[in-house]
Amino acid sequence: MNKNREIYILFFVLIAFFIVSVVYLSFGWLDIWGEGLGIITAAAITLAMYSFLYKDNPVFKIAENLFVGVAMGYSIIIVWYNILKPDVFEALILPVFKDTGNAPQYSVIVPTLLGLFMFLRLSSKLSWLSRWSFAFIVGMGSGIAIPNFINAILLRQLEPMLTPLYSGSFWGTVNTLLVLIGVVSVLFYFFFSLEHKGPIGGISMVGIWFLMIAFGASFGYTVMARMSLLIGRIQFLLKDWLGIIQ
Image 1 (cartoon, rainbow, N blue to C red):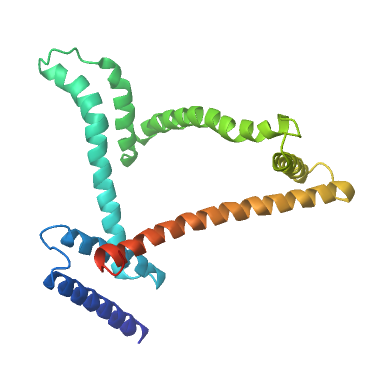
Image 2 (image 1 turned 180 degrees about the vertical axis):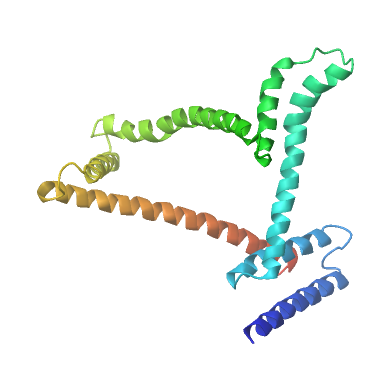
């Protein structure tokens, strides 16, 4: 019975969307030969994606697989025209087999082989060669990320600790004092060599409050980002598709 009800709901939504689209196209509110067909397609995919709020359904799965397929196809085209074609095909392969006036760049062979080794994960006998590629990527990524992390997080966190407490303004001094209390109390909370009792327990409790505020702010920032995306899609549906708002 529940399955039949879901089929009826899905069939009703599809019919309603089809009727609305036909009405808008018939009255010329959407131009089928211009942007109208693209707007209707985007509206259908948007509604299909948000149908997951009701529950997992075939329409959502179709939209999800379509999104993954389009994203993968777009990524392949971008990689070919921005990386493989200029840096490998035109720089190495084409000069080897054709006189282009440019000498082949043999230094591209090593990164090209590392890239090809990643496809060997599909081979049970040669999959061990892909570890060289992943080791290179992890090492390079760590080498790039660690200095940036130290500069953006650790040094930026230590900077207020090394500035004078009185900065010339009342609120600047309060801000510096809060950073000082927050950093010291959180470090006390993660100091597990001593039992959290007495003064150490009180300072650790202050550190817990600072951590909870930081986690809450991070969660709130994430919710705001998602709500911003939701507002953008609702504006698209009400403005570009239905034309209710201007």
